Image (cartoon, rainbow, N blue to C red; front, side, top):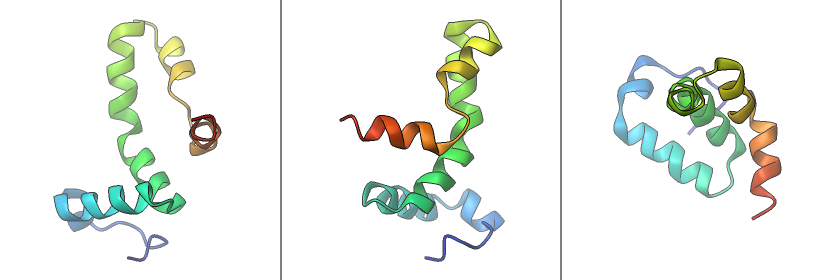
Length: 76
């Protein structure tokens, strides 16, 4: 799978393509992880906002890029 290419509409709606990204990310593919993160960040932010109630607090909780998540992954 070429992760450098822009996703097509089929990739965005195909559960099989999403599953392939998940498997690749679990296996250490940083590009796949970044694609998933970018794809789902707004949904995650909305969920956190339900509990935080203040957008700035929710944005502090949900990292704006993958670098912060990679740092946390190294702490496991």
